[in-house]
Image (cartoon, rainbow, N blue to C red; front, side, top):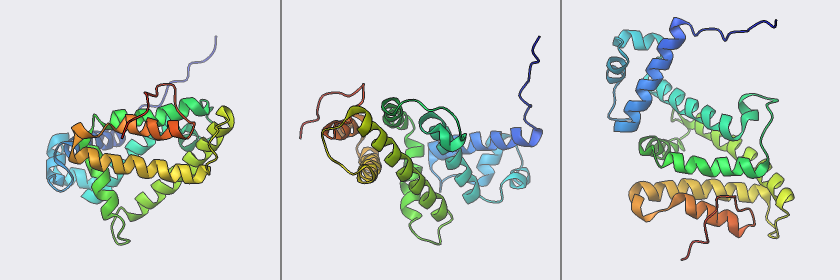
Length: 215
C-alpha cells in the first residue's frame, strides 16, 4: 500500500495572514484603497489594530500583497511555469483563451480593476511604494505574452506578419486601456469582444471568438 502524503496544515500565523488578505481584498474592492483604513481591515478580520500590524507593517505593503496574490492566481491559470517552474502547460491556443477569459472575470470585480488602474498610474512615480511591483509585473507579462504569441503564430501559421513582442505590448495596452474606458462607462465597452476582435485581425482568434466588431 502506498503512503499517503498529506499537505501540511497552515500555521496559525499563515491562517491569520490569509484572513487579513481576504478582508483587505473585500474592503479594497468594495470601497477603494483610500477609503479603507488598517483599523477597518483589522475589525473585518476579527483582529486588533496591533494584531494586524504584527503581520503587515502598513496599508501599502498589505495592498501590494493583495495585488500579488491575485497575480499569482492569474499566473497559475495562464502561465503556470512562472509560479511552479517545470509545470506542464496547455497548448498556446488554450493559454490565450485563458488570458482572454481573465477579462470576463475582471468584469465581475470592478473594485479590484479600479485599484489596478489607479495604482498603476500613480506608480509611474519612482517614489511610489508600488513602482517596483508594477514595473516588474509589466516586464513579466510582456515576456510571457511574447513567448505565447510566438508559439501561437507558429501553431496556426498566422497569415499576418507581426512581431510577437510588438503584439504583446499592444495587447497589454489594449486590455489596460479598455479597462479604463469600461470603468468610466461599463455599458459602452465590451472588453472581451474587442480583445477577441484585435486577436482575430492578427489571425490569432481563439475558439470562443465572436464575429468582428464594427466601427
